[in-house]
Length: 351
Image (cartoon, rainbow, N blue to C red; front, side, top):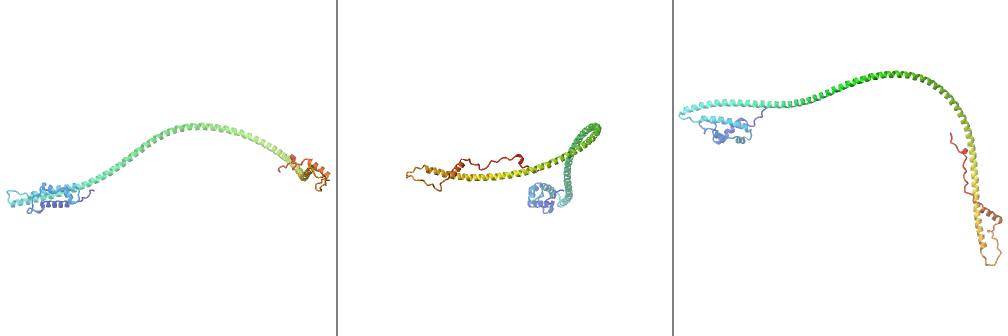
């Protein structure tokens, strides 16, 4: 649809007439009596222009204003021709001729205005139709672009499908050849399987016969081994009873020997204690003897006196000989050596 005009034709016409009146040109509607000079093209161009008219109106399309000014200029110039004086004619006739001319011009102007309005309406309709056609053309162009894109996508898809079809045909041929080969191999495998089944049936029959014989033989050997195992078990039970009896006897002997070893250890400990006491006595006697020997070796300058035996230091002869014997005797060991236990007396783990 055409965009509505910012300024109407009536506003343009009123503004142009006002500008002409301000410039000193009378309006054609004022009549012949009070009219000034007729409007010519030069005076109209000097008084009115598109720039001045647009500045006076404050808005408007320059092209629309130019077309309106051309129409108003033509109308005013033709109307101004009616005011031209005709020389050699009476005033009444000239006035009648001017009236006739004005009527003809008015009729013609009415026709021109009507035709112009009709042309403007046709032009507006044409512009509207052209705009609608442009919109439809643009829509059709967009649809055409979309259709072209769809066609391109379909062509691409069709080419892809054709390639896939060709590949599928090739694969189908290869699969057909492979299927024929597999069928041949299947027939050969079936023949081989039938032969293997026959061989397996024969071998199974022989194996069953051998299995029956081996089963009977195994049952016989199992029975024989069961009897032998029972006899061996009875023999082992008898030997176990004898071994338990001997173990009991050996346990009694071990306990007895342990008691003897314990009594021997006690006697040895007592002898060691006695030897220690005797050693203490011998040591004391040795000290006493050393003291006596020291006293005998000291020179005496005093007059000799008869030595009196000291009751505490006198040692009987028999005791002296006993002390010397003990001193000469070897020192007994503090602990007797441990004799290893016989292997038959060692404790065995209980079964």
